[in-house]
Image (tube, rainbow, N blue to C red; front, side):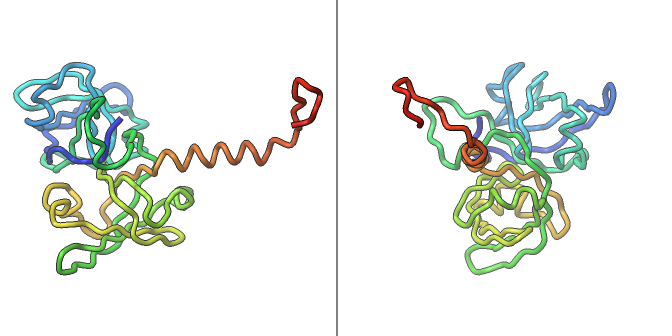
Length: 212
């Protein structure tokens, strides 16, 4: 579990194809590797990866073909910057929102509108995800926890403050660039629960014989 508060701007060192369509990805991140061990979880652009090896400020992780296809990690090349966050520790402050590191889909940056103290950045998202995105709700973009400012049928906008622009990859992305999206998991649970209630048309008899 993560919080969407980026700890470090890392860099892809190498991407080595392995068996099938998977890959071994090496990422430089001196801060997140300072206490990392084999088996730890580190989010790379919002994708939860498991540490295989750590050496000299760099960690490697196995990335399955499914992950490469369903996220924007497959487009990364050596030298590309990436947002890094270690898994949240119990008792730590929850500065963003609950983030699983499970990407729901790939979006696309549409436009940037600079203002005096922030930028409004607009993204296109898969239509199937639009029902989970609400104004003032939370969304994760490349691992960054953000608040939705506007919502459309197949797009949404967020406001990025100078700190986010400077310390994450979102400050340098341009129109057409892909981004990993994770919607608020609470919205998916609510949908599942309400859907189950709507389709449950069979009354349940209580122990007293009354119909509940």
